[in-house]
Amino acid sequence: AVCPITNVKWSDYESLLKISDIEYEVSEEYSDSVEEGNIISTDPANVGDRGSKRRSQKVKVVVSKGVRQATVPADILDATSASGKDPINALKKAGFDNVEQTAASDDTYSIDVPQGALLSLSVDPGATLPHNTTITVTVSQGPKPVTMPDIVGKTKDEAQQALDDLRLTTNWTESFDDKIPQGQVISASVNNGDTLHWGDSVDVVVSKGPETITLPNYVGQKASDAKAALEKLGFTVKVSSQLTLDSNQDKKVASQDPVGGTEVRLRDENGIPTTITLKMYSSLF
Image (cartoon, rainbow, N blue to C red; front, side, top):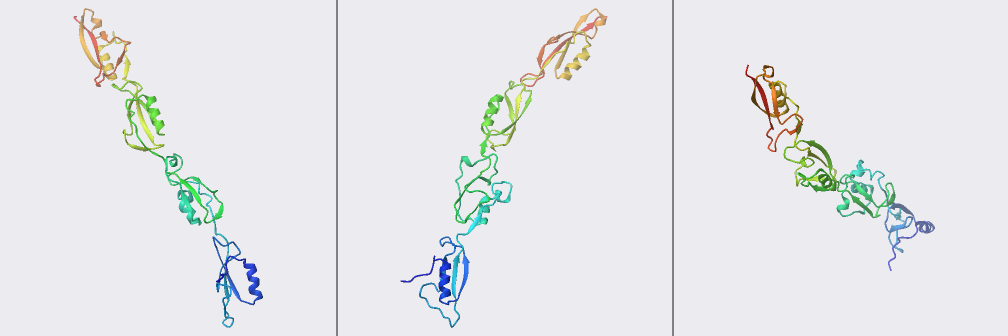
């Protein structure tokens, strides 16, 4: 039967060649199947094959260097490094032939690890291993996409919970509103139904309720000054006259409605300024 010379110890076979006075030349190659130091192949290939000494024919021997080794990039878990930004390609460039990626799922989204970077690696960074080692990687899909909920009209606590559940960041501000009760959401910077991602920021405005002012007491003051002051505050002012015989009271405020000290809405639900009525003394003399 044909008997190829393979997977035998080169040091032993070399001794036979020397004893037989057969010239040879040696090269080395990596092999996944032949142990390091053993023969991968010879030329002539089989026991009993003839060669020509007259033609100075040499036996060509290929000796195994064993399984080719490769080194995992040391910075592959660093998402800011070149290897970390494209880890699968980095492993292949390093010489690994059997890189397997886990299937994408809800568990592969991450608010911290950028899309394409590694969440996990089945071997240690920097390790030197056989090139055909199975390496399993889990790659981040980045922040998960979420749908903006409808929070307008919700209480601040309700809106906060809804946004927290979606891992969104909230920036709160407050504003007076003539229609929306205090503590309810007036508006959001993102429309209901829009697509966001974990970690995105949403600006939310919460109602302070209608703006109110505690009225000063203008009785006894000049009616023109009182009217100007109330209009500056944003009120509509209606002035009526009340006759008096005391000329010293002429053009002064006799009474006001609502009275001083009353807390009054600046506007009604339709945004129309509240009317303040002043009665002004008009002297007959």
